[in-house]
Length: 138
Image 1 (cartoon, rainbow, N blue to C red):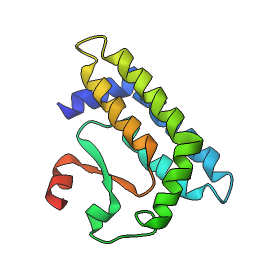
Image 2 (tube, rainbow, N blue to C red):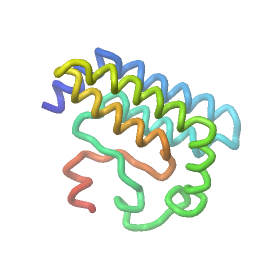
Image 3 (cartoon, one colour):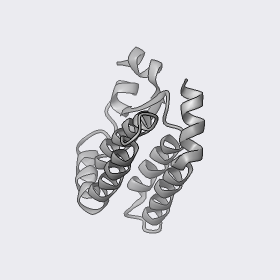
Image 4 (cartoon, rainbow, N blue to C red):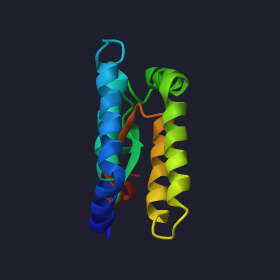
């Protein structure tokens, strides 16, 4: 089912969602200061292309070790991201989710938009893993 969901998602807007995240990553990468957010945008962009069967988790959960993105600096980075870009991306995903929830067929897509909206609020320190792998590592 994940494959069918990913194909439909990609064709019905997921391609543009991923490109949007990658564009945000390119804009962040233009400045040296924005590089931590650029990396997060590219990781989430890949997730936005094909989200079914995957989930975003903290890198600390996956590796078992805190790193620069999951510690205090990551929290500061997420606060700055939230103020300047996260709120707006999350609102866009929530608006898309509401449009998807209008139809029964769109409900799974709306759920994915809500997941992406939550990630958009604080992307630094997250990584994307297959759903089964995240449960085993947690």
